[in-house]
Length: 394
Image (cartoon, rainbow, N blue to C red; front, side, top):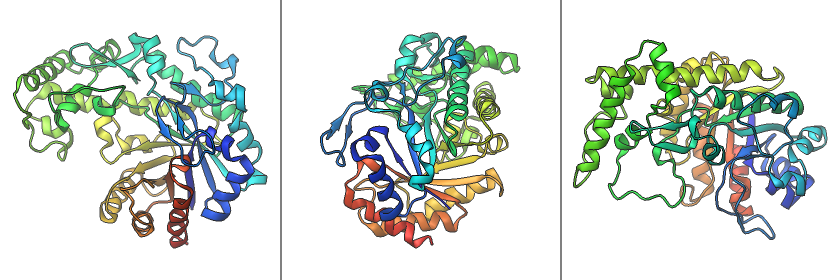
């Protein structure tokens, strides 16, 4: 069984590779480490670090040494984090040290969530029905953004040969994903956020039009709904069966419904291109959520093109976790990898038994593995909760 913990390169540097490997392997009982190899900005409380209790990583950088020969003809290129120069290439240390550490290596790779690159290349970010850019989300319909994501994974797999690559955000992101000091005085509900998240950039409109989709009618419909909720004194539900009904919540608006049915195509084909360009020695899996369709993910279609998925079930009851795993298994089929992502944050997880129950429910429902979130963000004593959860799976 795949048993891993998401972590950051600076966690490994702060604790030392030998120490973290021994802790994950012996204290916790894991067999894999999932290290961030491409990541975004943030403000992290780091209880494990002896010095960096508050940490602000660089925005939109990679934590490996890019192979310049792969990037020479690309418009959008990665920026290597100063951390690699100053403190060392932790991905190289992990992959070269697999025999010594006893840990398989998975690359937690953020694909299109990149505000730094979005600001540099605004013509390649998602845009709402009014044409306003979402700088934090490169668009999966943009040829340049697609080339970036494909080359990113090709570079990692060809030059480092990890056991697995976990693709985060190769899709459309929600408006509410957040950016920096976000302001919302309207009180957006779930359907409002979804409508604001629909992309009508030039790349999407051209791609959809080529497929025969009535994109302009869809854009006008989305713009009208956005304008209407912006004029209300208090939020109202316009689509009472959203999100439970999926895109059929919009069935009475045929142009918009057709656009939503098409919207998974750029995401599916991008993941297929990533897999095709990757070194076959590395498994390629998607990190996704329960309602991945909100971001344009068709899990059944994706499962035919890559090696599986990790579905995050952070704050769900065991029964809800099981439901997500059964649905994931049905979508992916029996041969593909299915993992569950579980967060070890308080108060989502108030005691060890809560985490153990979620992990057990996932495995009983068909999961092949568990990823725990996140090594450097939780107190050391909470690793014993992870250990108890892992022990129960044996």
